[in-house]
Amino acid sequence: MADQWLTSLITPTPQAGFELAITLSRRGVKYAQPDVDVLHKLRPEYADSAAGLTAASQVVAINFQTIAAANGYWRG
Image 1: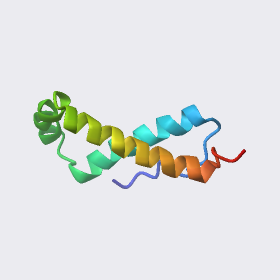
Image 2: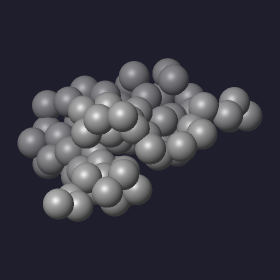
Image 3: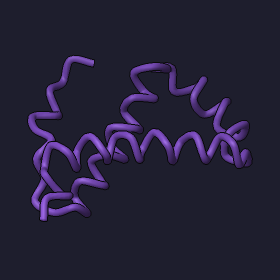
Image 4: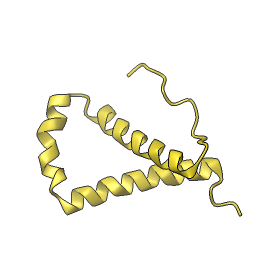
């Protein structure tokens, strides 16, 4: 993918940071598997899997942790 869409990890709010974390996670999947037909074929395998959904949540959480660190969300 040649488009430059991520210019900064800085977000105006934690909510926007969480949404960016979701976007990063989804785009990561697209980079790993660029064939949309394969993605759609595999979706039922993880959509009904507690382990698959937990793993997806972990990826979002890791991305949010990175964004939160970049934005200093935990500074008092």
